[in-house]
Image 1 (cartoon, rainbow, N blue to C red):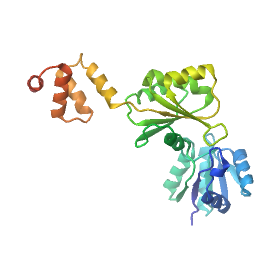
Image 2 (image 1 turned 45 degrees about the vertical axis):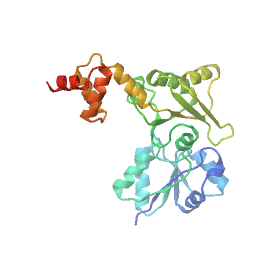
Image 3 (image 1 turned 90 degrees about the vertical axis):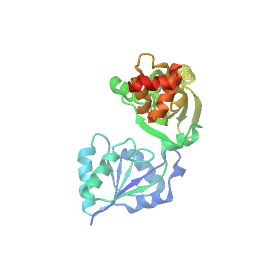
Image 4 (image 1 turned 45 degrees about the horizontal axis):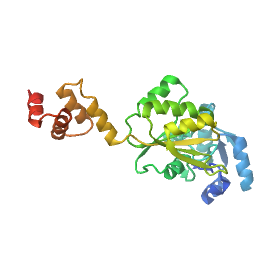
Length: 279
């Protein structure tokens, strides 16, 4: 009978945030797979747990993933932990989960801290709909393409960023998103926790004068429907009436309403737009 993979969320800073269920799971499993065994050793020593550790990280995930699968096929239960927070979010744990799914091995989530969610609920920005974007690539082209794809995103956006890249990231985001609201959540749950609610311009100015420290979650305001509508109104001059109408239809507006909007944009009657469109 196969063993199971337990995805154990560990504290993102404050050790008091570990759950009782996580502690019980770490005591029960046969092996703990850790992104950084030294860091995890400190945690389990703090908890009084003695378990064998093995490394599982980005650069050994292929061979180590195969090893972990073989161990679970022999009936061993394995806990997967990341450096901090919930595994399989922006880390190689997602590959191991996929392998387990392919091999019919049960995956059991053990809930706990997630930096992105804690930042979101503290940001004072809309929480009903959001998109998690993780870390931006350091590749200039890929970075630009990623940000370009989000320029018209209306949901609140979550990013992770390291301090040494923060300022360049803020400048790139300012270029693509404009001067929107942003919450910069630093060192969450730790002694120097800070949540700064500001704008891109003010954040850039501040960090130019005061180099950033600590790990950041960036929570960014989505584009407003009013801004999208304004850009649509201002961008129709070079379009035919048919192209103008199709632009609105692609946004999910029905043809009748699109005709009304085009007539309003152009300052002419709906009948004139209809006659030209159906010609």
